[in-house]
Amino acid sequence: MSNAYLSLSRVDMAFGANVVLKGIDLAVQRGEFISLIGHSGCGKSTVLNIVAGLLKASSGGVIVDGREVNAPGPDRAVVFQNHSLLPWLTVYQNVELAVDKIFRGSRTKAERKDWILHNLAMVNMSHALERLPSEISGGMKQRVGIARALAMEPKVLLLDEPFGALDALTRAHLQDEVIRIQSELGNTVLMITHDVDEAVLMSDRVVMMTNGPAATIGQVMEVPLERPRNRIALAENPAYNHCRQEILSFLYEKQRKVEVLAARGSVRTPSLLSSRA
Ligand SMILES: Nc1ncnc2c1ncn2[C@@H]1O[C@H](COP(=O)(O)OP(=O)(O)OP(=O)(O)O)[C@@H](O)[C@H]1O
Image (cartoon, rainbow, N blue to C red; front, side):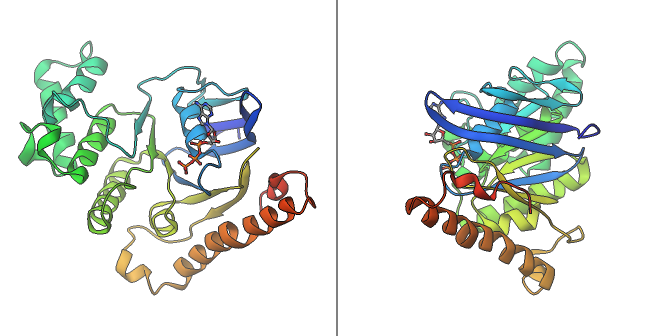
């Protein structure tokens, strides 16, 4: 735990009487890509919001690079499923706003401009700098959101279903771009997803959450696939298929059994599987 770049220790979260999270422990190394997967409503966004500093855990804590998190900060950039661009600013200005806020005191205007252009080029948006969000597609808006997050040079990139609202082809393109950028920059990433293939394709480890209430980490799986990863070649890779099976089995067999037992009153809480497998 001690040498982790990002760590969550004994995080509990309750909204009134609704105990959403119980005993979340996770240690993430610098440069690691972690996916968080679990059934709808189990508490994935709550975990991410606690790391972002948007929510305060009821107990336990989060440490990023040796510092306790207790508020939002530029060291943790968030990309949400539904792009959060300001509609009255152009693509360029949306990124500029974040860059100016963080680097006004440390970089010249020319340096900041180069940096904005560089980050928009990384997500292939150089052709649309002057367009408003209403004039670009959903996938393009997500690209700008990712460029804006990367331009903040965050210690940790927090992605809350960043591809969830996109069609399959756009989603695949953008996944590939994020994979490429992460391999170039070595970002530490925590990503929420519902998509088993996406989790395996993109992650170093997949963190599987038990069903709520009182959700916790049920299983953590290493993805033993070399990078760069090729989505087409992976389809026939036994290790890739094994990883998919493992997640599917967790989500649709192990978690389902707990649900059934809980419904029959045989178990007291759905966190029966809380010990890491
Ligand atoms: N601000 C809040 N106030 C009260 N309850 C909340 C709040 N945020 C989340 N919850 C509750 O916490 C639980 C977990 O929600 P959360 O959004 O974290 O789940 P999730 O796994 O991300 O869901 P999904 O996959 O559907 O997005 C839900 O019961 C939700 O109603």
